[in-house]
Length: 109
Figure (cartoon, rainbow, N blue to C red):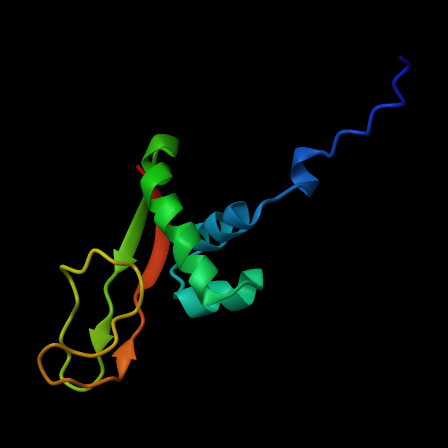
């Protein structure tokens, strides 16, 4: 059997995945999931899924995902012990629903 011509290889600089775009944005400075969503043009739900993966794999690339925790706008409670990346629904102290989003960034070791 004769095979047709091979597809030309796509140069690495032209082939960026969504995760690469997110990492690139986070390396430029802190961003909320909403800001990343608008910048990369995907839903916030997808952003959180990608951030979970980035958090697990960033250490292998000598990087670290830094999380500035969410904060209640009403009483100032900081969600510092929260493991989940998604925005909390309401404050455990005052039950306020106005929550300032967590910020994410990537720094090298």
